[in-house]
Image 1 (tube, rainbow, N blue to C red):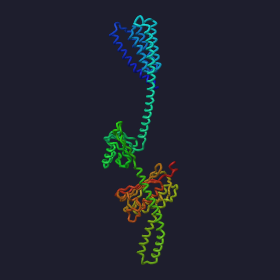
Image 2: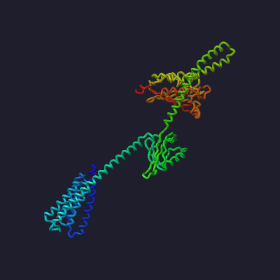
Image 3: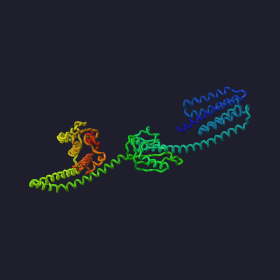
Image 4: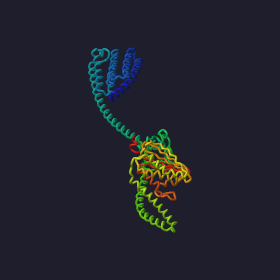
Length: 528
């Protein structure tokens, strides 16, 4: 296929050359010849038109090549027969020289043989001796010169084909290497999970990959050609300083900073910025790779919180067992004093109340440690929810609180859980909501079923929690209530962690607090 393409290109070049020579021949013959033969021009034009038509209708390139030589020698022979001249015989060598352009041994040999045959024909017909100055020895010299020319051209063609073959192998190897490198780079750029961006020295974006669009939110058409928009205003000074260092050829590897998404959200990223050089080792552009650390940071935060919960659970188990035994003895003795001596009722009443409070705190400790012994079974969530609502129904009436429930779940939705612990989660959340509305209000409880989990959303219309306290209320022993232990939300998170659930709390002062938690569905429920 490749040799056919080369022959096709040479056929096209020869067509152009011969059409040019044909018109030059017409002009010169018209002005120089005393009696021009119009039939010569017509025959030459017809032969060129035949070859041109073959090329236009896409005949095989080799057929067109041989047709070239046949038509050429036929034209030269025809001109020589009409008006024999030495100059016409010299054009027989032109055919041999032209055949060399194809680097084809067959074409060179055929051209040589056709030149010798034409000369011998005119020699036998005595045209060489009657019309032009030729002697017999000239025929021998002509044939020898033709054969020597053929041998030289065959050697040159062999040498040229060898060089072309070597060059072709090198070019193919280079093209394969370039293609492989290009494909590798394109795959790395396109399918990389990290955001990749290329930008000019003046800070304008040249190209971004798909991961960039997912992480930062900008589409390629929205950002290409514009100044870098993802650097937060407060960090532009440091970013510009780093870019200046990269423009000088320095490479900055895996440094942590913050970037801004299209929606304005600030995200933690790990960035590597490298210069792109040209052949003269001059920096022409910059190349940046950004890795979103949001999930990694959240995982790290979750692990730290898990460690705290684990530590709190260990502390809870130890402290509860150490306190409960002496607490039982104290409670028994004070109860005897309270019953036998009425004169100390005022003191013993307070002491019993405080002992009950201590006992309540110990109970919270035990709940904190209890999830380590969870027994997971299949339970209908609707049953768990109804039990909890029924438990708090009378208290809600007393405190003028209305519970509005909206359940978007299947009639028989099952979860794999420890029913008592999930009840404890809902009880703690409803208890917090009631305590946040001393003057009454509403509790909105929405349940939504998804593909793999349930989402329980509880919102009250209470006083709300200030933003500076919202980040601390999930820490162990931190509480805003006078009689609180600071372990309620810790217990909730610990239970949900054991159930592979999630927990999120939001609050606005004066509007209320909302809590969203998820619990995975029972596996067969998911498959169903």
